[in-house]
Image (cartoon, rainbow, N blue to C red):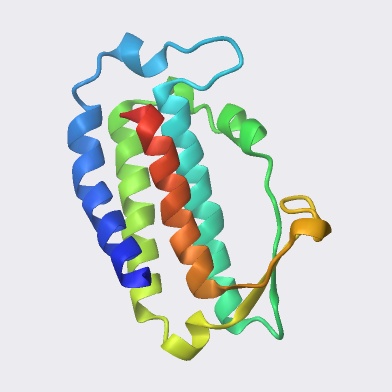
Length: 153
């Protein structure tokens, strides 16, 4: 399953920029009240890539289960000013981060992919918490990306 997720990620890296450049600036920046614009969704995906790249690297050397902490998604979209940045800049950053995620993920040994991770209560309440692995986390990253690509594209 991880191989399939990484293949899909590689395809998204190739396809997303060529599809987004076809949108006009108003199509990239317009949004409904309380919703993100296309640029802000792309910015959120950049933040997700940054945070998950750190998780994918840190989890490999964690003593015991690696604890995944949440991050303030809405605040990061605002403080990073994704709405105001040129699309080319956002696409370069998003693509570069995801290429690095591919490089890291493809180099992880199978036994390391099976390391356990814990999701903090801020993300997943204890009563629904399940055991997961680093491999699962990488697959979940791609699924999250694809969820947002449905809105973005």
